[in-house]
Image (tube, rainbow, N blue to C red; front, side, top):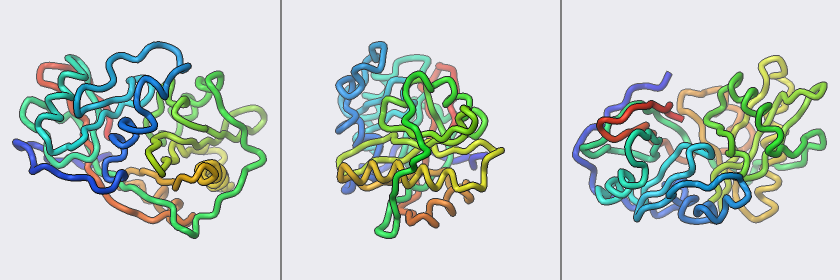
Length: 260
């Protein structure tokens, strides 16, 4: 369970983000994942995706929003306009949540980046997953809880899976993409098939595709998920930073979302 966090306050001093990974969701939404252009062909028409210095993914893609500067009250005002009433969103990184917002959940995450010792290689047994595989993906995600995965998350990048007797038992893929960097995400293995190195093979295979286009892989994990962090470090990833994640909603609305 995520540790409760205290994010009350009138706002922190403006924070600059000299590196895109410091505010990765914004760097993706302001770059390669700028909406709606990068999501054409996903089915459906996303609602407003950006107002001023606030942006968000469609809720059925990824339920994070982002602020150009999380310390800027004007960016929070733009987010309020963007999400409207009755909508809860996740934000990271966050130091303080300004007045007028309710914190309904939160926790701490870690960001890891691939080092030179991270070895990539194809996984011949892995198959490319597509929209027709989404029901199976959602079933695997529900059983393994690797983090948020929605009906159209698969459109964000390449997702690979491994099957056993026709059943999807492991997967990993690409989520956030920003200039020079791609996030490896949704790493999960069916409990009955753990200990066979499936996650390792998939991480290396997804990483191979990331590096082929000149990007550097990175990952996110809940700070308390020690087994996942140990796995990533053993493969050649290094913890870069820790950050606070908040689930927030405007006053008078309902609906809670989790921390990661």
